[in-house]
Length: 83
Image 1 (cartoon, rainbow, N blue to C red):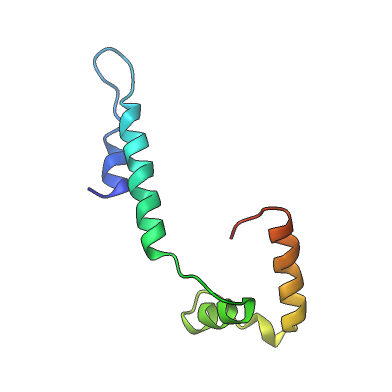
Image 2: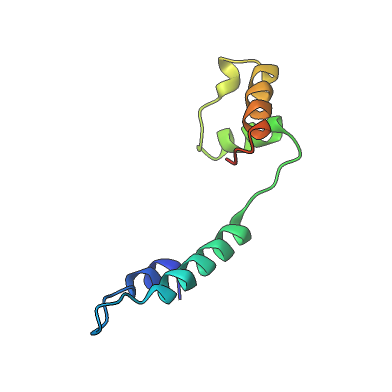
C-alpha cells in the first residue's frame, strides 16, 4: 500500500481517537519510497548537471560559477541542512 493510501486511513474511531499507527505506517512506507528513489552524486557539478538535464532546475551555472554554487552547498551542509 502506498503512503498516501495509508495516510488516508487516519480516521477518527468510535472512541474519538485517531488511528495514529496508520500515520506511522505511512511514514515508514514514504521513507522507503524516498530511499529507493534517491539519486546520489559524486559532486555538486554532477548534481547540477543531472537537475538541469531532467528539468528540475534551470542552468544556474549560466549565472553563477561552479565555485559559487559549491560555496552555497558547503554553507548549507555546514549547517546540517539537507536538500
